[in-house]
Structures are given as structure tokens and as C-alpha cells.
Amino acid sequence: MSKPKNGANGHREDIHWPSLVAAISAITAVGIAIGLGLPLLSIILEKRGISSTLIGLNSAMAGIAAMVAAPVTTKLAHDVGVARTMLWAVVLSAASALGFYYAEAYWMWFPLRLVFHGATTTLFILSEFWINAAAPPSRRGLVLGIYATVLSVGFACGPLLFSVLGSDGVLPFVVGALAILVAAVPIFIARRESPVLDSKPEQHFFRYIFLVPTATVAVFVFGAVEAGGLSLFPIYATRTGFTEAQAALLLTVMGIGNMVFQIPLGMLSDKLKDRRLLLSIMAVIGLCGSLALPWLSQSWALMALVLLFWGGCVSGLYTVGLSHLGSRLTGADLAAANAAFVFCYAVGTVAGPQGIGAAIDIAGNHGFAWAIAGFFGLYVLVSVVRLLFKPKQA
Image (cartoon, rainbow, N blue to C red; front, side):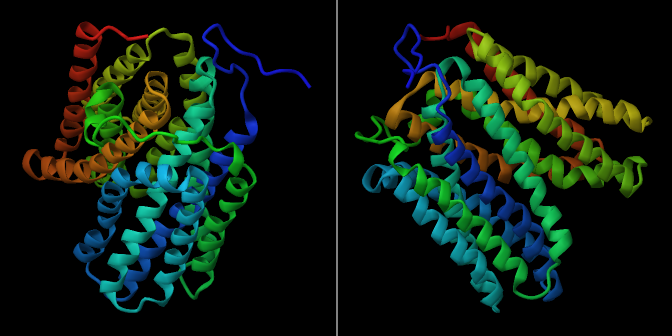
């Protein structure tokens, strides 16, 4: 059997597929379940006569659960083990997914949301840590591009399943729970190859938010623009003059951009000495694209063309930001930074819809574009300052 190829720095340079397949397939199964569950739960609450405000309040528990789970995940993985923590998270998320069907009282959905999204957050953090730790440094961007693409497909399959299964009866809940339980199979098979956290992180959890700000601010902006943009874009588009069908197609085009550009962007980031340069360029493209939205509203084709590339750049902030994080840290520090990364994403998903919605109320329909431009402008400022005053460390 041939020996693994090692680079000049002693790091393994070939892709270790068993570990990567385990982590990627596990989190993709969870992605399918989340993509199925989010519309399913909203529809069922609406059928029960729950107001939109209360449905939104219950949905917001996802971000709160993620912010609660992120700081404790690394400690759990250190004490219990990465693979074992992931397996427990699979069991908890599957059980809570099925529990929604049997929980008749509205208030019961709040603890269920906390358990479900807290457990899936743990799975995301540890899967991304596992992928980052197993990826060879020279091909980290490619590996994370594959991860982001497959995960996007998983999320897209969830709503497709929902369209087939509907919201009646226990079947959609059983399918969602089974999809999550499937994630346990590759984790269990590769459990002996999961990264080991021999030591605890050297710094307090919140210190990791500011340790690699080019990555953490990138994912905050990604979360804000993704959550706020996807939820409010149909309103913006229809008020601008597009039909609901045209607005839905524009979102589809954006989603295609999300999927098709992740592997090329990841491969491009592997060729660069400093990934922060690519992150800055994508932020500038995002800023220019959002500022151009009011002038593109007269042409569906032009809007679609810009959103195709714009969607790729938005998701690229996550993929390349995660790759940049992996290039800077290792071991327990990487695990803690991954948790801080997901924490910042959760904060973004809460801040984005609130900020963009308020901007529309204050500045009119085009406040949508100005608010998104504001998020991208923040990141352009942070990334440029870091490039100019903080040279990349080896």
C-alpha cells in the first residue's frame, strides 16, 4: 500500500476520503431533514391557527439555540469525544424532530426547537471541524467547496421532499427523523478516524470570534444576507413589479449560483497565498451587486444574470471564510474557532431579517438593497483594514 503524500511542512497532502465522506454525508443527511422540517413546521403551525408573529417567534428559536450550543460544543467534544458527541446529537435531533408531531401544545415547540437546532448546530460545528482537520492544506478550499456544494444539494432536496410528502400525518416527521438517523451510519463507521481533542482551547470562547475576524465577520455577513435576503427578496421583487413566479425563479437562479461556484471558488482559494484577498474581492462584488439592484429592476434577465454571480459570491464568503479559518488554526483552537464561526452565522441569521426588514420600513422598497449593501460594506471595511494592517501570518 502506498504511503500518503506529505508536503514540505509535514502535512498530509492527499485527500483522506473516508473521514471526509463520513463528515460530509452525515451533515448532508441533516441538511435534508432541516430543509424538509422548516417549511413543514411553519405550515402545520399555520393550520393550527397560530399567528404569523408567533410562528416567526418560534422559528427564531433556531438562531438562539445555535448561539447557546456553539460555546459548549467544543467542551463536550473534548470530554466525550468528537464522534461520540456527534452520535448523541444525531439521536437528540432525530427524537426532537419526531417529537414535533406528538407535541400538541404550542409552547412545547419552544423546547423542541431548542433541542433540535442545538443538536444540529453541534453536528454542523463538529462536521466542519472534522472536514477542516482532515483536509490537506493545499486542497482545503477544494474539499470545503465540495462540502458546501453537497450541503446545498441536501438543503434543496428537503423542500422537494416536502412537496411530495405534504404536511398531513406522521409520515413527513418519520422521514425527517430517519434522514437524521442515517447520518449516524457514516459517523459510526469512521468514528476511529475522527479528530481527537487532547487539549482544551487556550482562550475563552468569545475570544475566538475576534481571533480571525476576516472569517467570522464573513460568515456573519453571509448569515445576515442569506437569511434576510431569501426571506424578504420575494417581497422586494413583487413590489418592484415582478410576478411571484418571476421572483421565485430569481431565487432559484441565486440558488444555482450558490451551488455551482463553490468548488471553483474553493480551488481558486487554494492557489492564493492569502485567502483574505479573495474574500475582499467577493465582498466588493456583493456590495456592487446589491447597490445595482434598484437599477436592474426593469429587466428580469439582467437581474437574473447579476444574481447568479452574486449568489455565488454570497455563499463563497462561507466556503472561503471556513477555509481561511482552517489555514490559521489547528486542534482544539480550530474546533473552538469553528464553534465561534457558527455562532457568528447564527447572529447574522437573527440580525439580517431584522435589519433588512427595518430598512424597508424606513427607506421604502429599495431599503432592501441599501441594507444588504450596508452588510457588505461592513465586511469590505473589515477585510481591507485586515489586509493593509495585518499581514498574513505563516
